[in-house]
Amino acid sequence: MTSHPLLTRRIAVLAFAATATLASQAQDLKQGLKIAFLPKQINNPYNAIAGSGVETAAREIQANSQMVGPSDAGASSQVGYVNTLVTQKQNAIILAANDPNALVPYLKKAQAQGTRVVAVDSDVAADGRTMFINQANSEGIGRAQVQLLARLIGGKGEFAILSATPNATNQNTWIRWMRKELRKPGYQRMRLVKVAYGNDDDQKSFVEAQGLLQAYPKLKGIIAPTTVGISAAARYLSSSPFKGKVVLTGLGTPNQMRAFVRNGTVTAFQLWNPSDLGYLATYAAAHLVSGNITGKAGETFLAGKLGRYAVGRRGEVILGPPTTFDAGNIDQFNF
Image 1 (tube, helix red, strand yellow):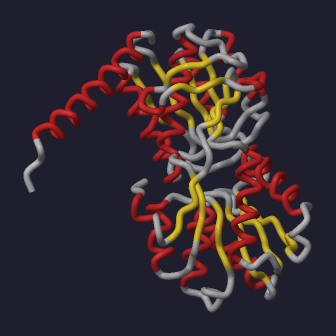
Image 2: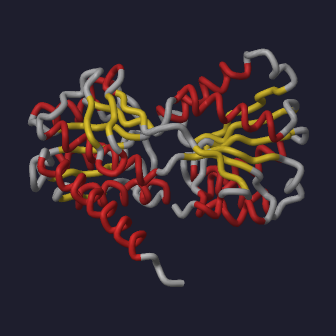
């Protein structure tokens, strides 16, 4: 089919306008910035996707980026990397914390030498960073997970939560909101029987999922608000006698969960685009270093293709609401 010349011209104009907008934003930012991304775990697929967003934004603003981090999600595993980045005199550090407090003394040293610290995905104590880029409103995530599970199990039955690490800030905040949602009228027939921890390790999460299903024979559902946990649990569930009997939902990427949706192991789950999260954090960090914002509530900044964002209380910026993925829409997404 031949493209209409007017349509082709319009597409070209829109593409030029988008490129011009990004170039204009880049001119408002200092050039050649050094920005490092320190995820919870370097080999976590979720973190790799977030890192790709950091890299994309860094290219747009002509910054130099790197991603470094531990292979495990221990509370102290990130300390050495923070110290190295301080020695390198990075202009900004973007990090997802394995523990809200363990890194704070080292992050304070980074800030004292002028390095801007932006937390993303999993926050640190406020005195350890300037801004926190939250994937979505924490209350909204926690409540939405319970609401989705309630719909999938008909509002009744025992369920468990398969979390990441016991100290993960984001996980614990979401679980707290899940518990609050359960106290609302309408959930009297649902009961949370266990919170298990897979430590964001694939094999441990697999074993924990297996253990939950064996320990609680009346279990109707599992919420795994971690991309590692939900995929490991789905892998076990897909080849077990519980497939089709126990509902699994939580937070996962479309690419890792697509096969489990297609084979009927999982009906629906939720997430945001991790690449956009890293992308937004990079623009926030660059604006901080460039002096365009200070992280105070009410300030706004432009974040490339994502548009304008406002800084909220305690330096928090929210990417946007999560998306629910199911068989009807999962093939529209590739991340």
